[in-house]
Amino acid sequence: MTTYRPLPPEARLGFSDIEGIGVFAKKNIQKGHNFGMSHLKIGDRLIRTPLGGFINHAEVPNCYKTKLFRTDKTNYSVWNLIALDDIKEGEELTVTYTFYKI
Image 1 (cartoon, rainbow, N blue to C red):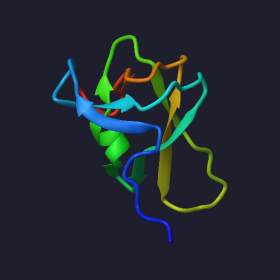
Image 2 (cartoon, one colour):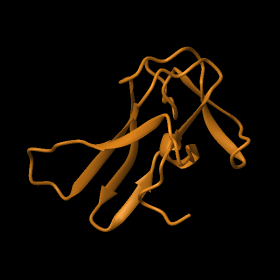
Image 3 (cartoon, rainbow, N blue to C red):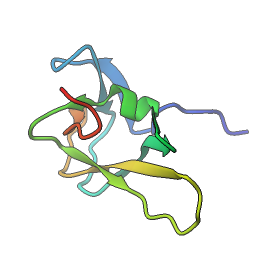
């Protein structure tokens, strides 16, 4: 039986020097690693997954969001979080916010 995991297995929450709580690498991560879904947009409604909800903004991030290409005609979009650089164990995952004003 598979249990629900709000974060990918290689990530954990922790106290952030950037803002409150952040997402941190539990092990060394290679550039290009796909952490999974961070955001989902259904119609005009943007939904953050736990990964997208706790990742903090940085002007020089170590991750980016990529919109997945869809071939069906449904009314939703998905973004995944990808490592821009190699990330060391214990390092906070960051992204440049594009959906929100900071």
